[in-house]
Every structure is written in structure tokens, then in C-alpha cells.
Amino acid sequence: MRALPVESLCVTLDGGDLSPLEGHPHLTSLNLGTTTAPVDITPLRTVPNLRCLDLSRAAVRDLTVLADLPDLRHLALTERQWAILLDRGHRSPSPPPAWPTMTPRSTRP
Image (tube, rainbow, N blue to C red):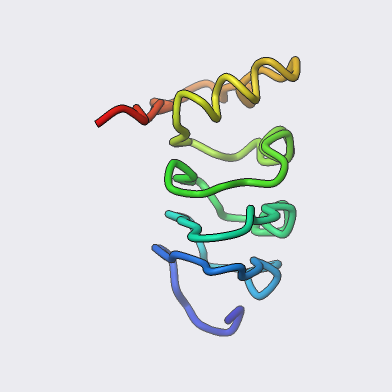
């Protein structure tokens, strides 16, 4: 996967893992969904150009990994995911000078 010059990826995983994306040099945007087990987003720490991340359709094993992604410019989470992250004492990643929106996604219909 790392060899493909993909910049934007929308994927739904069924018990999959993100290790094929480790160190991907071109990926800037990831929209992730899951259908079964929570996914480990730790491999995203090594994606140097990741700027946009939507986890609002994903069950994530550890949201605190987001603190290790300082170059994100857009982060979409559900209200519940934000609450979990903030309840664990973590704030949103520190905003750079021109921080765009961080989008809470409602889980209500």
C-alpha cells in the first residue's frame, strides 16, 4: 500500500489493521469506518503528511493516540468519542497558528 501514490482514502475495515499504511508518504486524508472490532490507530503516528482524519464511523481502541498526530488540520469524531477523549484528561491536539475546524459528529439520527 505504501507504494501507491494515494492521497485520500475512505475505507471500512472488518477487523482489519492499519499497519499497511505505516509510513505512507502520500496519504493526507483518511476517512475510516469499522464494522466489528475496534481498530488500533497507532500506525497513523508514522504517516508524515496526514492532515485530515475522520474517525466518526470507527470504533477506535485508544483515542489518546491522537495526541501524537500534531499535524492534523481536520479531525472528525462523534460526540461520544470526544467525551471519551476529554474524560481521559486529553485536550484536542494543540492547534497550529491557522487551525481549521474540528468537527463533532452527532450520533443521533
